[in-house]
Amino acid sequence: MGGVNHLIYARRRAEHRRLGGSEELVFRSQKCDCQVMTKKSATSTATDKPVRTKSSQGYEVLVTLPDGVRILKPKSKPEHFTSRQIRSTIKKVLKSGAGG
Amino acid sequence: MASESDVFVNCPFDDGYRILFNATVFTIIRSGFRARCALETDNAADNRFEKICKIIDECRYGVHDISRTEIDGNPPLPRFNMPLELGLFLGARRFGGLGHRAKSCIIFDREPYRYQRYISDLAGQDIHSHDGEHRALIVALAAWLRVQSKRRGVPGGGAIAIEFDAFVDQLPRICEEQQLEPAEMTFRDYNEIVAEYLAAR
Image (cartoon, rainbow over all chains, first blue to last red; front, side):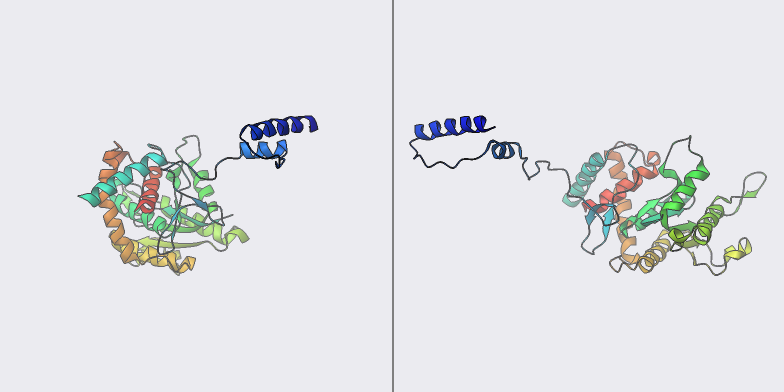
């Protein structure tokens, strides 16, 4: 492992010199570099997926309403559509109702 | 072991009762619970009685409507499915052991004290009449769920009834957008629509 680390250090030093930097480089191990490279972004890119939590009793909570009531995800899945489809449809209907 | 937020719905499933059934499920979900009933699984291989026993086992609360216990058909005989399931629920509470002692239920009939003519041993249970009106059912059920669960955030039945009427106005459009006839909508579909509708408002 020491040889690999040395190679990485040498490459960085050469790059640093090319860019006109000084010799004071901070050495980072290969393991550390791997962690930085493979760590996933903490922010989600999905826009239609609501934030859902689990209650202390293991129920999936769809939303907590302003009065404090938690709307729970039903136990059984729907038969004629997916949750995502009906969510999108309901939003569309509510939006059109609010507009007209 | 009964789940703290699961409510077993024992009521008729025919078209004539549809609005009361829908109001019951809406009130349960709006009050922060999950509605469960025999229609939630459609596997014909399942024994219906076993399926009902399993759901009762998993539910802390029960809503029982015995208003359709009446003579019907030829020869005229009463339908006893709902009183049977009510008996199962009461039996689970009585004999089910520690995990079921906290079971609690509300019983509806269409007229006060009518039950005394055909199931008089129920005297002493919490029996309410809804006169076939969904608003009366919602008001009684919401109040009962609030008291039983000690969840003070559960809204009053009057407020939930207004929300339910607004939902009923939107439901045909939701079904139309989904290219689904209201009659084709199953219990599982309806359950999901109500939950997602309440979450999306």
